[in-house]
Length: 568
Image (tube, rainbow, N blue to C red; front, side):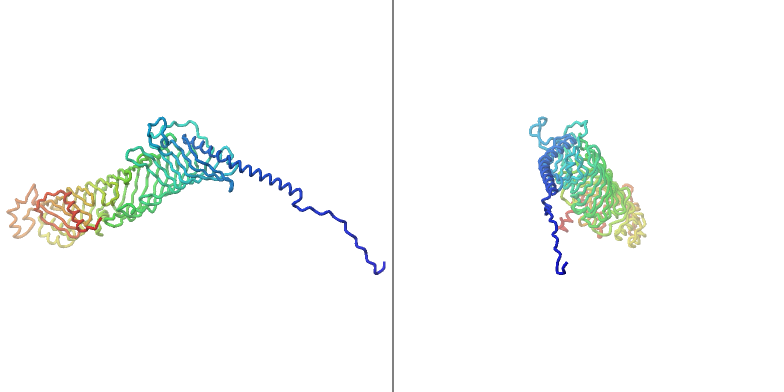
């Protein structure tokens, strides 16, 4: 081959051009299937949206009607498939159990229209399409806004128990309610329904034939405080809803007692309750480390342990009993706390104090930091606090009998007067001077009194004050505003007039001893004790006004108001 010869290149065999992927058969098949699926899904969505709402509405009405044996109304149910299956309902009402909501043929013309037994403003839940179409749809969580449950009074309706168990087309695992209200109706004249406003309520294990669990949070209106309660409720007693069992535990925290006019302190309480909606038994304890009345402003520790019965028919609470401890003094109360429509509560209690200390109680009522006296106290009284807007100190009423033993006055001047009187009354005038000037207590006293405290004044119809050698019988009053008191009566001594002094005074009095003796006493004289805690006046009383303790109390209250005209 010549050197300048070049090989002739070979041309490759021509190949057919490949189709783009979007024009291939597999893609066309895939797109076709997808379009068909979308059409089917769209058709299913339209079908479910149009038909699931009415189906669900029917299921809800049938389930609730069978469970409560009552007509049920439901305004609307909307189903959305935008974010899964979301169901929203509006205007749910379970009717007759609170009394017929509309008059029927069995009622008299003009009978009042009563509220439905159960009203739900709105509710919503999510589920799957499979569960939605199932015969028994299980709902994991239902959110409810604006629920109101009315419990009818006894004999408020007539209903026979159904022998069949309700059909549960909807099975609920959990119900969460916001702004719920439970109203226990009453047919008692002059009584208002008992209303519980609940901010948050969670119900779990919901079933028609077994109790379900609940957790509730609410704000108590007066005193203002937070209540948290957990327990079980049910099963629902359709023939008499008030007989539905309820039990649980509660905690009441940060209760501000100053929201009740006239008292102050922060109260906390824990306890348990059980029974039926119409009759709940509550056992609990309270702690108030700074309880005070505004008339004194001295905070004192107060603890109570109570057993109470709440009547769902009237809302009244029976306390049987309350065992309380104020500082170191124990006492008990039992009685009734009755609800008065539009006014509050009427409290009527029997108070028993078998062995207390007067110095634990006086700071609650007196402004002075030092108590008037120290003594053991026994008291049996009736306490009444009527309803109304007045301060507690202005409307509290306490009447009964009190006995003080081992009385020791904290004012040295007063105690010296008592010591000196005792020495003279025993016929020991030589010891009277030392006893009346050493600023030390030589004798202890005993005091028994019948009293009636009202309108910030304590009226004592009978006071018997005993010291060695003397008996003092008085009647008078003590006005808390201004701490003024005035007592009138007489003193009877063992010694005669001449035996109560020495020297020439004793000689001069011997001829007149017989004029002062009376009913076995060596001496009887009219006396008056008046003033304030820090300025006490002892003296003879020959005015003979013959005033009752109530009249004396009115005068003291007038004096107190005159000295402090701005006091409300």
